[in-house]
Length: 537
View (cartoon, helix red, strand yellow):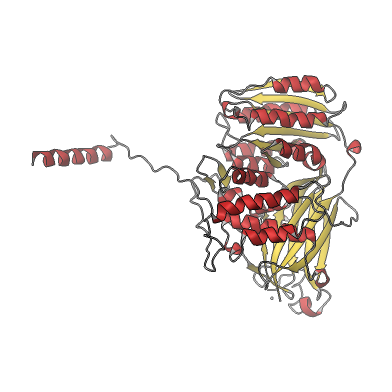
C-alpha cells in the first residue's frame, strides 16, 4: 500500500514540474525517410506507391527536405502527375543539367542499399548519358531532336523524347579559365572517399589546363584562407603540391569560404573568359551562414557577377545533397557527385567543356500540347525545376545554364487522342483550329528561351512536333532513356512503375545500347543486376 502511494506521489510531482516548466518534455526526433517499398518479385497489380516522406523542416520558400537513415538530406520531390490538356496544355521549367543523382544512387546500390526516395531525380539519371542520333542546328547554340514512340510499359501511351543539344566545340578554341577551387577541409572530409578522392579528381582537372588558364585555391574549415592566388595552369606542380598538402580538421565555415572564393575570383576576373568557382565538399556547413535559405541568398547575390559556380559532391554518411542542389541552381552552375576516380574522369576530363564552359544562360523550356491530338501528358522528372508559364517570357526570371556540347533530354508520357486562351497557339481562335486548321498535324511545340552569356535580352528557339514524328519503334537513344526513366520510377516506388520490373528494364536497355563508345550504357546493365537483387531478394 505504502509503495503504491509513493509511486502515485512521484507521478503527480512529475506532472506538476512539467506544467511549471521544471521538466521539459523531449520532442520526438525527426524520423528518417524510408527507402522505396520492396516488391516480393514481380510487382503485383495492386502495387502502390509508398507514402510521401514526412517533412522535417521548412526553409522559407523552399520545399521540405528529408533525412535518410544515415543523416543525408535531400529536397523533397512531389512527382509529376498526369495532366489533361483540356485543363492545362502548357508547362514551363528550367532547362538545367545536373548528373549528381545518378552517381549518388549508384553509390548506394553498389554498397548494397537502396537509395532514399528523394535522392532519385529521374531527369539527372537520364542526362547522365550521352545520346547519339544526329541533331540539326540552325542559328544559335541549340539543336533540337524529337521523336515519339509507343511506350514499352503502357500500350495505351506514347513516349515523347526531346533532346536539346548545344554545339560541340574544339577545346583549343575555348577561352582561358579563371578557376577558383573552393575546397572543404573540415573534419567531416577526412574519410577516404572525400578529401583523398578530391585530390585525385583535381589532379585530373589540373592536367587539362594550359598556360593561359589561372588557378586559385581557397580552403575552409573553422575559417577560410587563401592557399594559392592566380597561378598559371602551366605550373601544375605548384598547384598539385598545394592540393596534396591539404589536411582535414575542424568545423565547416562554408559561407565564409564562399565569400572569400568569389572575392578572389572577382579580383582575377578574365573578360570574355571562363570565370568559375568550383566548390568541392560534402555540403556539411555548420558555422556562420549555413542554412539553405541563407546560403541561397548569398549565392544569388553573387550570381550576377559573371562568375559561375560548379559543385563537386564527395563522400557518404552526411551528404547535404539538398544544399548542393540549391547552390548549383542559384549559382548558375552544375552539380556532380564524384563517387570514384572514373566518375572524376568523366566529369572533369571527358565532359569538361559541357561542365565548365557555359554557352547559354537562363535557359527555359516551354511545351504547349495540342489538345486536338494529345489528351494528356506527364513530364518525367524536373519536379524541382518547375516555373510558372508567365515566367517564360520574363527575362528577369533566372533559370539554368547549359555548357558546350551538352545534351539535355526531356521526356513525356503522352496519351494521344478543349478553354480559350488568346495566348495559346492551339486554342487562340476556337478549339476547332487545333483539329482542322493550320496546326491539325501538330502534337506539341517545343520552345527554348536563353540568353547569350553577358547579355540581358533572351532569344527564342521553337520546334513544332508533328504526327510525322511518331515512330513504330523507338530509336536506341529513346529506348535507352525510357529504360533509365523506368529504373528511376522503380527506385522511387512510383505508381507509374506499376506492372514493370527491373528485368524488363534490363531487356529494353540491352536492346538499346547503340554504339556506347564510352561504355556507360553497359555499366548501367551491371547496375541493374545489382539493383534487382536489392529490390526482389
